[in-house]
Image 1: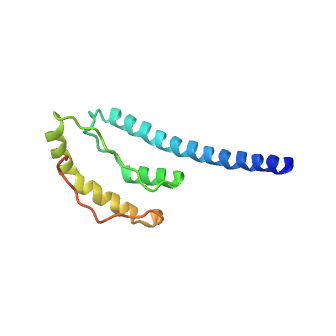
Image 2: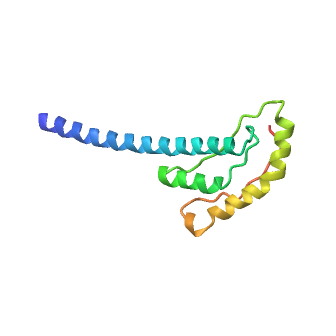
Image 3: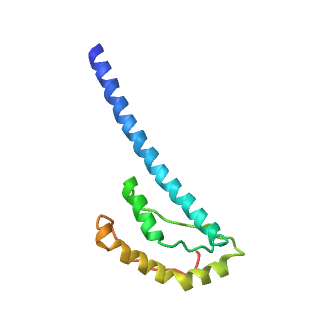
Length: 126
């Protein structure tokens, strides 16, 4: 019985160690993306949330691939005062940004990514 408990504990340590490393890598990838996006916004002298990140689809796809994630979204908090300008901003840029990202996701480089191309763009916050 002592041998069983010892072996069980050894396996448990390996399992939890592996899970911990995976979680650490996933959070590290997301943290790296967030830092990169904040730096990009600062360098462009953009005011949040009026920031469009170059190659966001590519960046997100890479984070998903290294983290074994299935979904990554950017959902900025928009104040009531910013709302009309935000709705105009997204109406102006949204469709082109979505199309570029979908084209990227359909490329050979990201064939493992599930493409959700049945969507509706809403230029209004609900």
